[in-house]
Length: 206
Image (cartoon, rainbow, N blue to C red):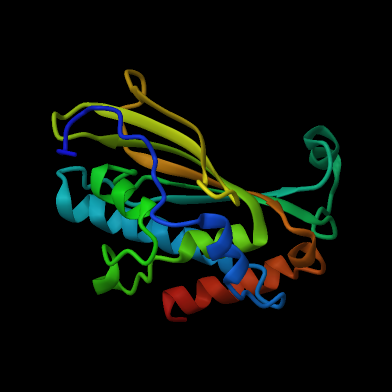
């Protein structure tokens, strides 16, 4: 299909559920999916700055969602002891445009090979979480801001609730990725704060 503004329906290149089942992710690495999403966010920001005229500083926001009602959690002085349920990562990168969306549908994609991408990050995410929920604003080849959203689950097809619309309110590109609901085997005893700080230090070279 040509790069135009028509609706491009999702189409996984192989049986997603089987690929996830065959993948090995040690229980001792429950934060690997989060690191994959953060890495994708960094790549998206770098791509936006190298391919477009949108040169505003990159920004990544990470939200930890824990078990418990939000109003109850807001009143607690220390929530670190509460079990993590999900993560939300928001970036202001290039968004899930045609090239990135096509790559997302292809397992073992070589699109990010030159920057170390192996094309299996979303499989790692689904190994530890029930689903990946995506909302992304991008600019199509006609200069229009568009928004595509979908749920990515451990089914044969993978994609559910796919939507694509012309975006008239948001004029900045970027992606929100929610790693939704830990699988029980990965959710126990996550020492999030220590491991995450260690990850940030390694990413920054400190």
